[in-house]
Structures are given as structure tokens and as C-alpha cells.
Length: 142
Image 1 (cartoon, helix red, strand yellow):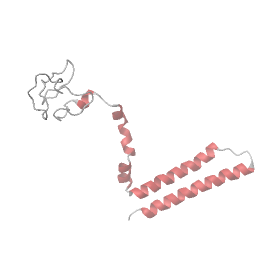
Image 2 (cartoon, rainbow, N blue to C red):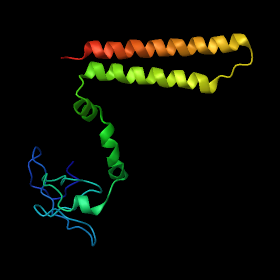
Image 3 (cartoon, rainbow, N blue to C red):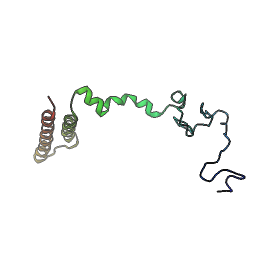
Image 4 (spheres, helix red, strand yellow):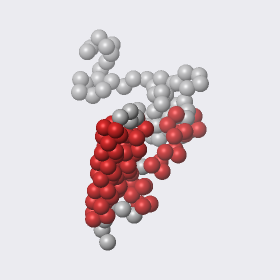
């Protein structure tokens, strides 16, 4: 440890005082302590001050997906006025309806037995959708 900081009169339990390294040209520095920000950092790693021009600097690709916020669970729950259990049952019912439609699109009937099997699967998926929708109605608080 003594060879890492030569001629140090510092106590071993205190960190050595190093000279502040000024940032290279084009790099942004903290306005409070003058240390260069790490790449992509919102805050200074030395003093914790907030970076000033972070939002106008680099834009994340996630920022372009802001329109997907309307699909967040909590915003849907608030907009539809449903409790969480009813909303989950509603989504399960929608999934069952989509599965019933997909059964008809994926499988084709070549014989009467195939035709009956496909319709039986559709009936099962639609019955599951009805059960999910009824559960959502029963779980809704009045």
C-alpha cells in the first residue's frame, strides 16, 4: 500500500488526497467538484451532484418507446377502474378468446373427426374465456 502513494504522510485509515484531475477536452465535468462524469452517468460519482445537461445530451433508444406507457398495468388498471384481480382475469379471458381463434387458424379439418376435434378445442377455449370473464366480474369491487 505504501508504494501506491509515494512519500505519503497520510494515516492508513484515511484515503490519500489526490490532485483533482481536470477533464479532457470535450468531456463534461461536475460543476461542484470539477471531476469528469462517467459515461452515461446522471450523477457525479465523487460528490453525488446531478448532471446538468443529461437529458439533452444522449437520448436512449428506450425514450422512443414512450408510447408503450399506455400499456402499463397500473395505468390500465386506473383507466378501466378495475382491481388487479379483475384485470388479470380479463386478460386471461382475452388470451383464451385469442387461443380459440388461433385454433381455427392453425388447424385444418380434412375429415369429420378432425372437424369435430377442432370445434371441441374451440369450445374448451371459449368456455375458459367465459370462466375468466365471470371471475373478473365476481372479483370486481362494487
